Amino acid sequence: MNRFFYTASIHILAPALMAWMGLRARRAGGQWQVLSGPRFGFYGSAPTLEKAPVWVHAVSLGETRAAQPLIRALLDQGETVLLTHMTVTGREEGANAFAAEIASGQLVQQWLPYDFPGSVRRFFAHYRPCAGVLIEREVWPNLLAAARRQGVPMMLASARFSESALRTSLKAGSVMREAYRSFQLIYAQSLADAQRLELAGAQGVRVSGNLKFDVVLPQEKIARGRGFASDLGRRVVVIASTRETEHMDFIDAIAHYLRRERKQGSELHSPVLFVVVPRHPERFDEAADYLNQRGLRAVRRSELLKQGDTSTSAVEACREVDVLLGDTLGEMHWYYGMARVAIVAGSFQPLGGQNFIEACAVGVPVIVGPHTHNFAQAMQDAMQAGAAIRASTPALALQQAVELVDDPARHHKMADAGLHWVQMHEGAVQRVLSGLAQIRD
Image (cartoon, rainbow, N blue to C red; front, top):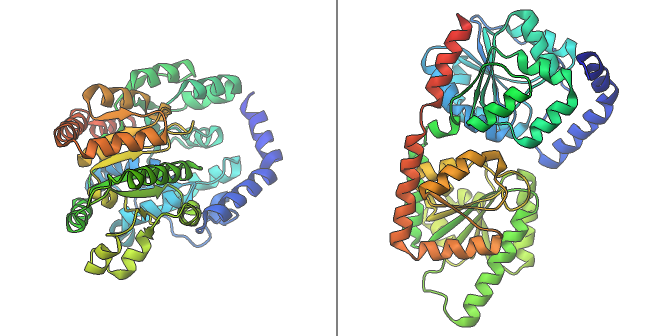
């Protein structure tokens, strides 16, 4: 398929695609503005930027978090940054992370327009970026064609490219080969990603590593989490970023574990507190209802915040419950600060896994499920370094986590291994900055 037929296809399918986006927005909540002007490249009275920005596109929450060290480095260099997204969770994460820069005008957030020729042409005409950086895997043929016509150098950074993505790209034919050849520079996360990208048509691919290793940790938020856990006096296992129905699987596993402990009379004076953190807000109420159905005593993080975050009443509310439900956004580092062990979900169903590097960077041992192809090389390296282990089911992950919190020597060894492993892989941001300087010259 060439780009003409690709464009014809997306025009024909546009009503169905808009309906799908609308349905997704209703389920997720938030202001998606699916049919707003910026989604089609119309900006009304929005002012143009005085200085040509470096444009960074981070499609959703994970990519926005991954891009933060790079964006921070660009801002520190005095660049104006245009940050675009496709989802509301990504936009909210960017708004929270760069509130001061948005207020000063140094960073501007916007929706990425849909990949219609007119929409992307108007986007470039309005913002006139001096260069563009797409994070991880967002490759849109008409967008890249418009950048090429406008003379905007483009980079794909921290790129990951699975076997499945390669097969899909090859089936699409010339439209995707042309798109990948439009990049002046591509930095892949691993050698395997680089090799697959070259098979898809990319040229001159380099390996930079993963931007997530250069994460700038919010130490104050981590310290508050650690302080809360210390005041609570309970061992904490965080089950992070559950997707789809994983929260139900883990709640079932928690109920089974607690029932067995109580039946055997072996529950300790200070039992484990399990923290379940769904990745998407639309799952918060569903998880709360399911906790109630399973007869588990639970409190929501949003309720603690109403009582005063780390107040005595908030601590007391967690003393007798089985589960703390993480129903807030932008607080993962607070949860990791609390944790003795982190089970990083998105990997117990065939979803590819979620970012576990941040937990390692905080010094928390990690347990993942069998499906981690989104982080294949990083996961392999982390396991070899002794920073992470794998469990085949939620029940086994829970069992391993409890065993780990009861084994101080092993816990300390894994925590140290994680910190060292992250430090050994830092440097991707500097490599990307150097490459960006090259393509802008």
